[in-house]
Length: 137
Image 1 (cartoon, rainbow, N blue to C red):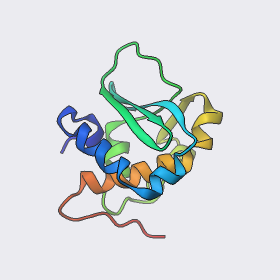
Image 2 (cartoon, rainbow, N blue to C red; image 1 turned 90 degrees about the horizontal axis):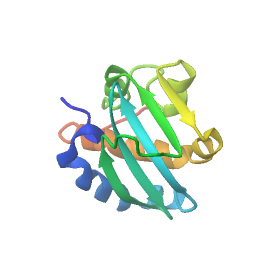
Image 3 (cartoon, helix red, strand yellow; image 1 turned 120 degrees about the vertical axis):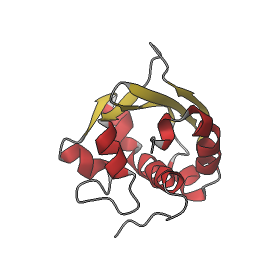
Image 4 (cartoon, rainbow, N blue to C red; image 1 turned 90 degrees about the vertical axis):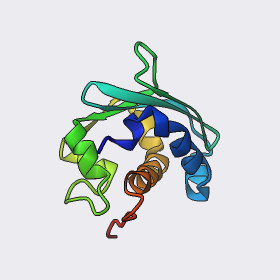
């Protein structure tokens, strides 16, 4: 199964789901960043402003972003499993174990970690619509 954030046909529904989530809106209320998510050579840039995803573009070549979260397609697939394996349950854990990498404005990235983590939770739900998503506390 393709990764939800790499499927152009699903980007609008993903952005709508993220924008409808009150937890994301609260965590992202001060964000004004272009966030690039990359898996292998493919990627999508999300523009997040004032608690909303205002734009999502698949594979934007030479488009600037404030920061990038990159990893292999396998690492992202594990992160988006309904119950992720150890060290894939959270962006920070995957970064700490060097399964995902943060590049660019790290201050912006880490100040946005709560919002980004919630966005990943919502991506996990979109990735697994039949089985839902459960991440142990």
